[in-house]
Image 1 (tube, rainbow, N blue to C red):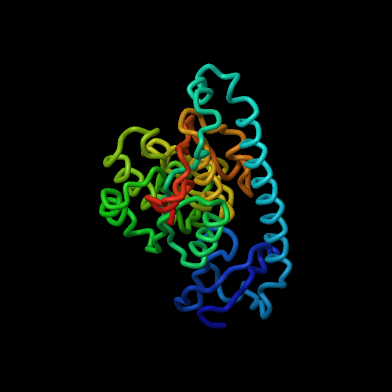
Image 2: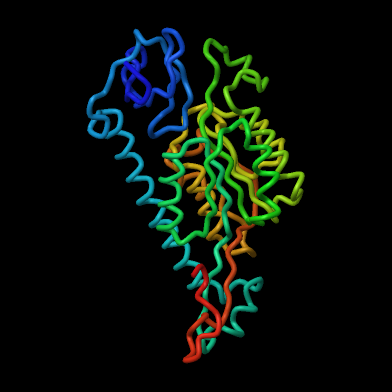
Length: 305
């Protein structure tokens, strides 16, 4: 057994697929392949998985992921259709009536995301989903411990609308539920909390800068108190690698005059309300007109070009 091997834990019935990040004496440091869990286990408790992509743990996670993302994409499409059908009814949207059919059409400006991730493989999956959903995102791979410093340096440069602070986390072994209050009971929650505080020091207004923070079993209450709009994990459960991304996309694509529908945002995640929660927040998408490049003489590049 060596670093880089894919393994499952016998004591947990092989429910989660892990990758060995390091081996210290007879203990392996493990990172979840599909879930943002950081764990350790004795080598004697591990079984090497020779074909990780077809293992039962990986297949079960992929099925859940595909079903949830399909539901999320359908939900987003239905939300856009509903807004188009009802925007003339809402007085707060009356200004749109005046330019309901501008000669050059509309273009969309989704909210820009700055995503810090402690896992490079997860970050690549996140980037693929941002691209599929047409959400502009600057994605940075860095260890959880340096995120407070990195976020403080990047925010003035990138000036995002939404920040995602995530990676790996987990409750330390043999901690009874009563001892889950202190941050010292978690592997990386303290780093996430410090990073959220650094971001909130830069922009105190929760609607000006939306923060999505946490990973598996993270200290949900501490992250919210530090200033996060959305966080994991209310029930200290494992969250899927893409759960913070789904919430960020929902925030990016919700119009800036509308509050993000909390139930829809959480329902769109793979692990649901036990894994993600948050507070009322307005969206970040804006419409513009005319559509860049619609006329014969193209003056400005298309958005995102």
